[in-house]
Amino acid sequence: MNASPSKESTLSQISGAWRDIAQSAARSLGLRNSATSVSPKSLKRMMDDCLSGRGGDVSARMRTAELGRTYLELDQNGKETFLTLLAKDFCANEESIRSAIDEYLSADNDADRVTSAYHLRQSSSPERIKLLIQFNALPNGVKFLIDIREDLLKLKGKDPYLGALDRDLQQLLNSWFDTGFLDFVEMTWNTSAALLEKLITYEAVHQITSWGDLRNRLDSDRRCYALFHPRMPDEPLAFVEVALLKGLARNVQSILDVEAPLGNSQDADTAIFYSISNTQTGLRGISFGEHLIKQVVHHLSHEMPWIKNFATLSPVPGFRTWLAELDGALFEDGVTREEMELLKSRTGAEEAKTAIFLCFQDKEWFENKELADLLRGPLMRLCVAYFLEKDSKGRALDPVARFHLKNGAQLNQINWLGDTSEKGITQASGIMVNYRYDLSEIEKNHENFMNDGHVAMSSQVKSHLKQLGGVLGDESTLQRLRRTLTQSVVG
Image (cartoon, rainbow, N blue to C red; front, side):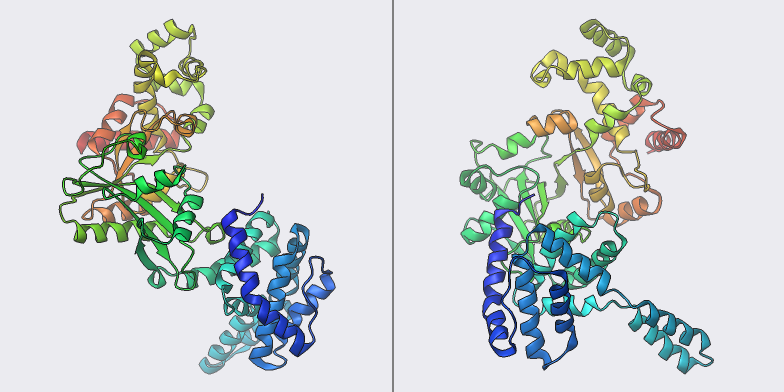
């Protein structure tokens, strides 16, 4: 995969920022100029030189800049060689660890145990950590490390050494990108063109098709907020797009319509988060979206106290895949007898799954009112059941649901044909959902979801479960469904 235009531009900026440092190193220390093809032996020597401490901090900075520029100029195979060397040749020293363990086990008083525990921690820390920290100290060094991790994520596979390097790098980035260090910024049409262009590049949910489209998303009835790190002021880490509306939004095309009349934010009572994007692949596993949403809720609550409802309009990206893999017999519980008769009459199929997927063969099925009305009931019921499913790690199966439910939101509403774009139909048969953020319920919902996987649902969503009332998967799924059905009747 080629780097994005934004990444290429950033790498060029880093290379330029380090050019003078590296050239100064070449003059002062006699270092070679960077080249696109470097042998593993010379790469290792450069890494050793960076870690040697010879010549003091200034020399180390120069050597590190020269090594960094070398990495930027390597081809894909060269980068793999570089990362493999860093992972294997600069990991923790096994002999030092064993010696420190023996020292700790032989300690016979508290003072010796405290000292030996410190030595054990030090011996188990890989040499490469020091080199990664040296990169971070350079201009744009933190962005360089983020992009190195992006490369590493593509390469590591199941390699234990590369996996360990990835964990080291993620741990460092986690500490440097603690949410307490981040800046919360409102993006407007007056924001610099360079930053606005990055919004267009990084938008991951609903593609921004033009500058006119972007301007619509930044108009007076819209808001856009982003998180930045002080060391990366020109690179948003995450951003959220918000529509200020009267009532819950059911359809994303109406929000994205550039021809729609401008709304009056003073009349709005609801803030709809309709797009949330994390921008840096190299920061995968470090979540900013949860913090960003809560920041926006608190910010708008103070700026616009008349806004009483905070909710998303979210995709259901895994629903169609789940449907395709679901046992055909289990579809029967999602379809009423009357619906099955109509499906059979239309398709000739005796089984519900076969009939429904035959309907999907008509690429424009959602524009046929009779057909769309027929599929609505079964797909809405099965979609709610999908939100009860867990993956192999016991997490909510749907990644978007996992994000919002973990964040303390309630599954509030299922919206039929909420997204009729090609992507929306392909991924979720057009279904979108609203997750509602109620400030008084967020902590409770979060705790219940994290402790026992309980999915907070509105009465509207529970009504679909009451209609379902059948077997959905294995026995554990059936038990969850029965428990949810019982709770829905009581609640």
